[in-house]
Image (cartoon, rainbow, N blue to C red; front, side, top):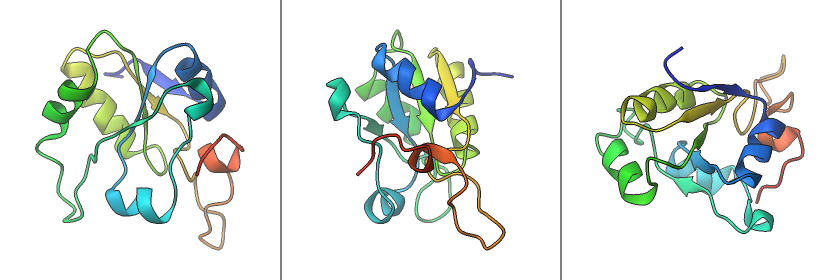
Length: 130
């Protein structure tokens, strides 16, 4: 593993409550149409940087955007839809000097047998979102 490790969504929330930065690497469309984590009760806001662009390609500005918004001494809790893109983003952040964790299950979680994402994930674990 080339990042700090994997965290269950509730453990990820606890890390954010303790001062880690929640980094959501989904696309702008996902943020707009599906929702975003709400950490306002912790007196903090997530950082939103796309790992993939709408074109399907990796965001070539990912690391420069991250470095402009988050100091390397702040631990990162990296979140995507299902926990796959966030691994790649956590690996890239780790290579750039961050301590980065992946959120297992992601924001929406894995699909059920009908393809609906209602099984697990940030939203389905009833963590705050809007």
